[in-house]
Length: 138
Ligand code: IDP
Ligand code: MG
Image (tube, rainbow, N blue to C red; front, side, top):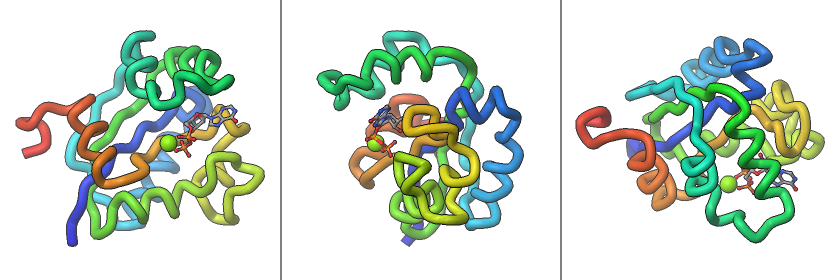
């Protein structure tokens, strides 16, 4: 069944000019891009988006990284979009990411790991509404 998920091409992907390659791969994997914005996250937005990690040691550096330059946020649609995107992304740590995954190919390290993907259908809904209006997703 068709499902939606949120992806963010992180500041490292934009800076290293990997957006085209990442988007091409997502389209090859059957994801339809429903909506997209290029933006620079404010500190408040980055802190709120990653609030689940606020007690982790990597929270502050993560917020700094995510606000360090522009990102592309995209609403994607496909069958089993949430699960499939996580599979195509690979593990959080590129050293552990399977061959052929986006993080294995494009991530620099466990923090600068190229791409975000929602981790559950419920979080996908929350994260999509964080960046997109109902009209943009209609
Ligand atoms: P995910 O992006 O694979 O879902 P999460 O555990 O939700 O991974 O962590 C959110 C983001 O925080 C990661 O994508 C990465 O940028 C960063 N991060 C996670 N774990 C670490 C760590 O141990 N050190 C530094 N940064 C981390
Ligand atoms: Mg996560």
